Image 1 (cartoon, helix red, strand yellow):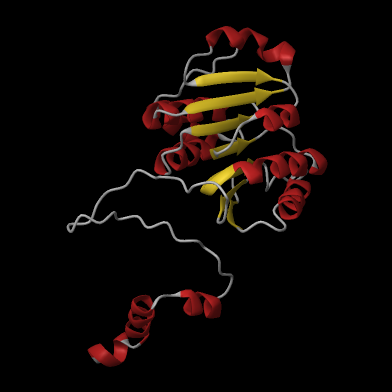
Image 2: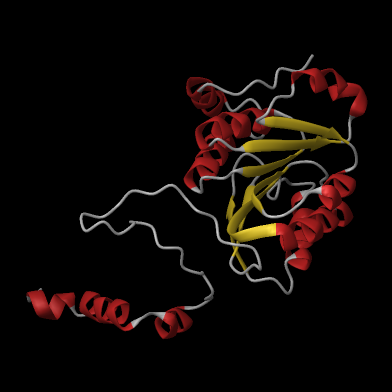
Length: 237
């Protein structure tokens, strides 16, 4: 039977150091992303070590991990270990995704690795995501698979307002943030400033260049930017 119990934090750190699996050095990142956005509805496509990290994070956010894998023979023995915070569906990912009710906070995609299936999955996921929700896609820097996966991401997100970044190690992890959605924004856990205002402001990342960034900045931000640029003249150095 596969051991997919939630990781202890020390176990995840040890996996990072040993890096025996392709996801080893992404587990802490995934764990922190889920906690950081306070994800409640967490999709897990492809059972494995990332499932353990997601389950550990869900214990912190009081969320639910909804896992899917098509390998019935390998994972059917896990069905008896489901609980309120972990549900398993053993079926093709598109059937699972079609049945999921929105909104979704966080998705970990480490199931299929071909262009067609990744594009199909993302096409089903994106309309159901909360604004500022996160989608992580693994193996985007893998030598044999990465180009097809990245092309699928490019084509699936065409027409959607998203921002993304790549972590180019341990076979690669692409993190996609949904900038616009018909579903309410995520509600991250946050700390507060001395005056009581939240220290986190959810701001769409809708620019691709420095000139656009300056155009979108509000007046106070623009003034701070000008002061920063003129700091040498102001301070005399």
